[in-house]
Image (cartoon, rainbow over all chains, first blue to last red; front, side, top):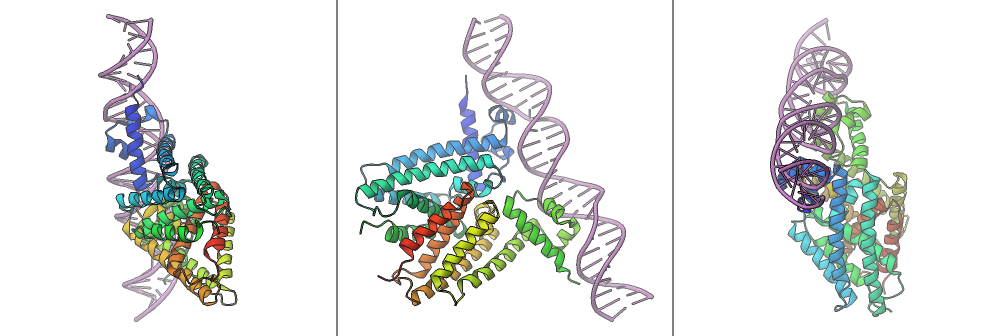
Length: 196
Length: 196
DNA sequence: TTAAAAATAGACCAGTCAGTCTAGTATGAG
DNA sequence: CTCATACTAGACTGACTGGTCTATTTTTAA
């Protein structure tokens, strides 16, 4: 019968709590209590907390990537404008979580990549897929003549991802989206410039 | 008699372990065992784990700021060259810790700013002092004619700090300093440019 | 020399952690 | 109906958590 509803509920609740408090600070019992699932069910679907954590990452990454694709491959909008919309969506999300959650992948990357290679690999794959989406959008901008082709798209993508993740971190500690705005401002003013 | 040696040993060990495993994942007992100090001493010097964590942050921030000042205010070197040296030092540190530790303040900012306002405030103050050091160096560069005065130094400083922290995060998950190099490359090529 | 204060020492506590275990219920196949 | 499997249910375990407690040793000041 494969009742996946309970499994999904666990993952959804896990993503929420881990996003708010981190992986280590989120107890399995807290997840169970929040979504009203007994412990027996948890260990029926997941063999350990680590496997659960990886499932949370996978599910989040899939959903996030779909959203990313929708934004960055929207061919009815000029490439650089798509990027601006992506940044705007990130700022809105930051507001909506009271500057507390930020980016789940970034949070876990910081917390777990020194703790477990399994987690680090999983998170790095997410970052790389994400970077590839940026590369696609940047190449589109270069082909459309919106963006100088002097800089390689993959270097730019790495630069943007780093900067954006860092801006999210600063926004969390500052409790303000200002660092995200400042990052975007200079990025478009100095880096993502039209051909000379 | 104010024996501060034990206290310092605790803080030093704490910084090391928290840097490696994060705050929540570092138990007091582990700190005590590592540096051979009994629990009675710990609670003689610190009233709680939180107070201990704040002391670790303070001590780290002070040491880091001193190093930062030495690098960024070295008037025998042109301002932008000072910045390059600072980035080089960061990359070296990343190598020396096997891409595992990264930046203690960044790590804790990610892990704790959603968990405790006390920690968030302390970490934000560190970031802001850090940013001010950058502002000073950037203004020096503008005065020396190395850097266009078109962009406000404080916006630039925020941009650089965000980007650098994000690059450190990426370097941790990738286990390579490449993101740090790519960030530096584009920063100097596109952002920290001489007056037109 | 002595008494107060500083510091060391670690057994101990209640609570929480991830994970196990046994029992029971629901469901689908034959 | 029958039986195996999927799933629910939660009491329980041993290890570990931050923190307390009492006792002892060391140092300082008078």
